[in-house]
Length: 278
Ligand code: ZN
Image 1 (cartoon, protein in one colour):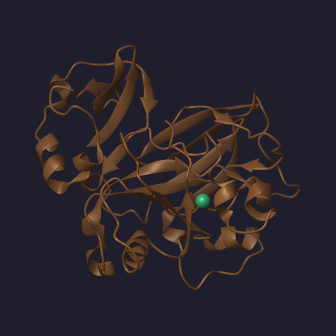
Image 2 (image 1 turned 120 degrees about the horizontal axis):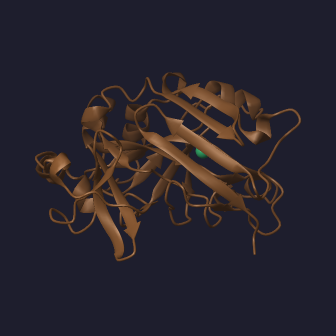
């Protein structure tokens, strides 16, 4: 099951995506896709809906959840990416937070004022679907509602050249595209075997597979739950494979007019136009 939210001229409408990739109006069954929708019980009820019988709707993709409360991020989670960043392979998952509002999959990226190093990161995202505290790796995936594509847009100078933590280089406005939808976990039997890619202006920059994560999803969920309660509506983005602009020789960063396209096998694709700050 693929769940989305569509911006229409009458407002944001909850949607289910059919086998052909078309959005179907789900508003007769739920008023919105909310953190509560991620529970196993709510998803089981929606799984009984006949998607082909729902009306088609057109519009842009909004973020697939009405209220993403926290965006947890894992850094340097692919060994080749750690190498291109000239940083050692971490002993534990590296946690940081992204505090900008999430945006729709095809919403534009605005280069922040003063930025010269706006960069891209295709990532597997995880939607938490239950209160999660002190879970084991063996049961961690039971707490997951589904998976999605994310672009962890990053400003490398803001991230690393002004002291302190990475958050300030990760949280600029428009730096949180997610979606276009989230795919329930029953359709993703193995989150550690998914191909992923990212192109800039049609040129392939990132090619990866979630099989090369240093810390797999179950390990990340268990690790975070050892410190704090994860809640429905929280999302985790799990790190990026090699091929970011920072790691290129010479380095390459986004410019106004660029187009970024990215996707993950079975989870959909995103497309972002890059704009100047105004
Ligand atoms: Zn990242």
